[in-house]
Length: 456
Image (cartoon, rainbow, N blue to C red; front, side):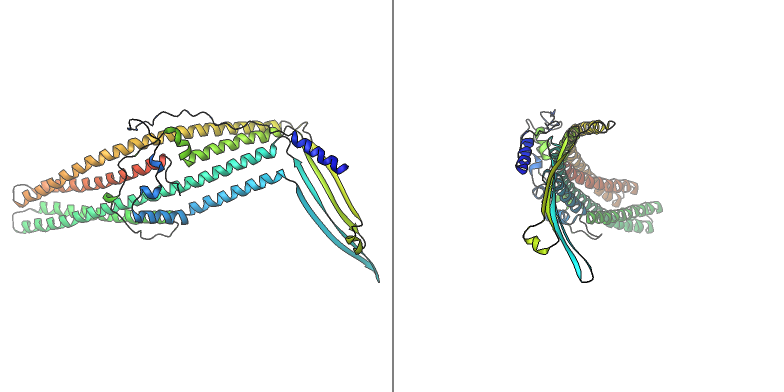
């Protein structure tokens, strides 16, 4: 009857159990109807972020680098280990909902002379804290939310890695282009120097012109050294992203041959909350903080723990089989808070303050995400316009440089005109390469801001 009574009491207590603390409700989000700087006449559900990274980046060498990074990067490995930790934390927290059972056993023999006494004992104990007011359930809810936040952070790490590798690769191809431009300029200027030197020896040129030609050669050579430095350092950086030691990087398409979509739809602003893993992580952090309020509030109420035990003790091994000497006990304890000098109230207020911080952090993250998309949209458009104008400018200077060289060879222009044209042309070619890189990177920035890059 005693055991049946305990079971009946337990069932009654569970039926009367409740979960204190606020249930989570997503805060209202003041999403704009359309991203600022979005030139589409009406926002469409489709977004650039819906493209998988290998659909956006067509360069096979770049794809291979990203695949390697997603497997070997230390950031990826650390993020995966954090997910495993969070999963086990949920298991540990949830385990408190169930009885904890321990077993023990032992034996002893004592004797004096030819006689002795053998003692055998064994048994087990059970402890079970009844979750009457939801303290354990709220703690489990918080642990699950933290797990989801960790998983979302893992996707954010993946997203950042994909875009970081792509950006670094485009910077590498820009440095390659800078090196190519400088080498072409060096060959041209060395030929020009030979011509000027011959004219000077022939008495139709001056030493000043020869010195000016030599300065152009030195400038091109210095540009080559600078580009070679940038190439090796960028290669080293990419290898770090790949979890590898510094070394060369295989190239694919040239800077100007990198294919990017002509249109970059932004999609609906309201969909940004689901597309961006960092926003998902921030919201789950808010969910966890909200659940922690319930944990702190449950501490104001009594807690009940049931205990039970049983076993046997015998001085005769034969009695072990016949269960002679068996014993058991059942009981329970109640912890009723009376006075703690404000500790429970302080913990409750701390939990509420942390939830408020998480709420403001979530709202600030959303506002910041809208701004990042708007900045990226204007960045893509203006980077494209700038690159187009720079192409026109570089083409004009190529023609000007060619004509200046012809005028100088014909004796109708001074070498100062050639010098000025050559300097402007090298600078324009360098700026054009940077503009082409910036256009690619601006698309990658928009892709990341919209929440793309983490898809499998």
